[in-house]
Image (cartoon, rainbow, N blue to C red; front, side, top):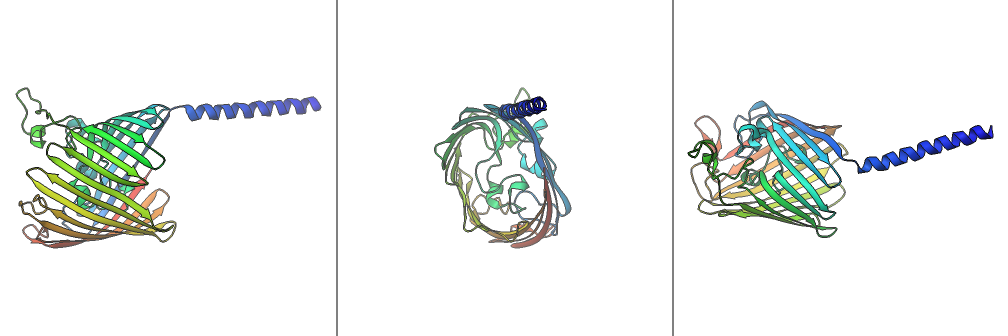
Length: 349
């Protein structure tokens, strides 16, 4: 009997040691993962403000987003693919097979505090992003819509201390995924003599300094300079205040700038409510499409967010008011204010 107990004890000890060793080995093995989201919505108004996404009337589709990633101890990759109206708007400067590529990059962890990334990634400027899963509000701001969506190039990320980080990057012209082309016209309409778009001989420089969750961003090159601040503070366990301010100078085309506050209050574990209040000034003529100057826009967006498992429902009411008649109200008429209601469903996996 003692021998049986001894053998049983030895066997269980061996199994325990084997499982423990296997767990240690598994932790060091590369991991492959699939994630993403889908989103769909209803919009009450036939016409929308001049910001990105959620602009279609009636019952409408956002996008299907699938993110494939492979993470090793020293290196890995991300392939982020989008399909649908929101995805098409997000990669507007892409052409051919790249029109479903939201992000595509490989990275190398040179050390614990230094990572090199080569490829295409979403912009580091601004408070909002392309994926609706990472934004509190479903519709987007003017600052996000006017700024860059993505960059293709090489960047270096440094962890300087526990609370301080630095990113430096060299990139193609903003939002050009496949290569560094001279302009949208060269990409789509004006091929060179050999049937290819004209290359661009100037690159963009990007930098980001992060200190305790507050970020100062810079994007510059070829007569374009944008300085951006993104941050936020937990004012209590249930109340968060996000902040975004940006200023861009486009040589020969004007300037735009803006500031937005994002107060968000958690009322329960499953329901939160948030406001985006944005003041935006445009001196490029994009707001009215007629080259006007000193165009001001103020918008207030109130969004509720109810979460059940992986599903999030967002009812949203938005009011935009402009210093001129920027907004379409009919096929032939314009107005200086616009209100709309959105009900969005987002499922993340």
